[in-house]
Length: 227
Image 1 (cartoon, one colour):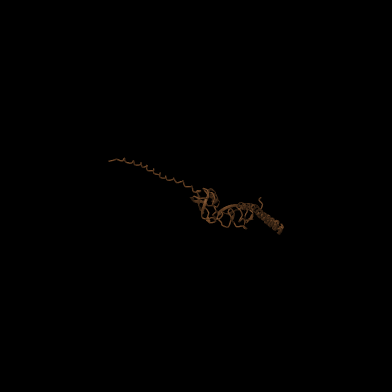
Image 2 (cartoon, rainbow, N blue to C red):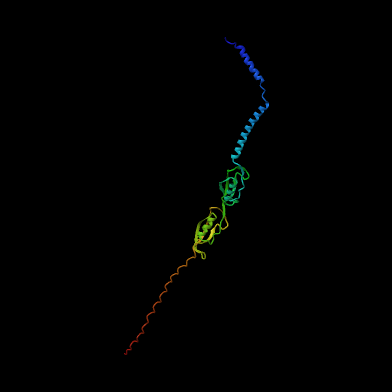
């Protein structure tokens, strides 16, 4: 015989509803705890990421003032600050000495990442120079002195001079102290030494005296004849 199914199904469903109704309601503290744990995990992840980023990211440093320093001194100062020096250009300057820093980029006082390259503009010195006094110098010495001033000995004229030895500068153009652009020419008058003495002139031959006229023979007296 088969058992009736309808009443049995109704009875099982009723028991299930009764069992569920007997469960205690969920505590509100449990939800709050779960939320707190979730927030804590997320915050820990964010904090860990920020800590790792700050630990590995380059630090910021202040660009030191290097204007007016020699090139080597500026490089050392930037290295101590955690920066690298890079020569960006060399420029003529009448106010900053040759080999010294005219300008740095970025500007001093700015905060930049550690390890950044700082571009330096180095002075090539003035584009002008003063003509030195090369008078009474030897030709070779005059060339060396002019080269030190970024000038060169150009056109030369040679003359005899009574007191200056051969190869010494008698006069120069332009005069000492003249301001010229670098790589300009200085002309000079060079001594050929004293003028050599003129060779003696050959003496003119003195005319030979004419021989004396021959002496006249005395006339013999004529013999007397008688008549």
